Amino acid sequence: MANLRLMKQFINIFDTQQLNDLQDILVDDFYFKSPKIEIFGKQEYIEYAKDSGSVFTTDLVKLCEREENIYVHEYIVTMFDSQVKLNDQIHVIEYVKIRDGLIASSIIDYKMNDFSNSARILLKNTVKNHGNPIKN
Image (cartoon, rainbow, N blue to C red; front, side, top):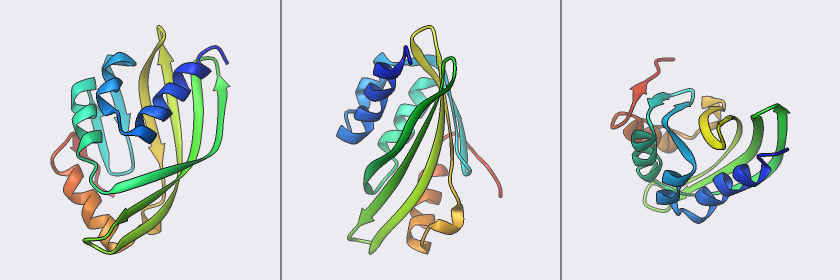
């Protein structure tokens, strides 16, 4: 687990919402994919992360090295927003690839049916401003 420290730093950036720190740990051609969006490039991803809307917390379920330079980060996201009466918990599995000591990609998976209508609307509004929306 040579890159475990980098992975913990990546997770901590989101936990503390210090998203500008992503500049230091992502490759320029960073790739992100979720069930709803695909993003190419570090800057676009950072803007997407900043605009991801509601307040959320994460609870680590598992972090392990799947194979050399590929980590599995499994966690529960609790999204909450008092304005839209949102309080959702989503189980997320993230596959993170590391290249040359930096994070090269993040591919996350979750089930859309785990989202309330309010969370779906919030996600849809965030997605339309960034990257390439994925049609389901």
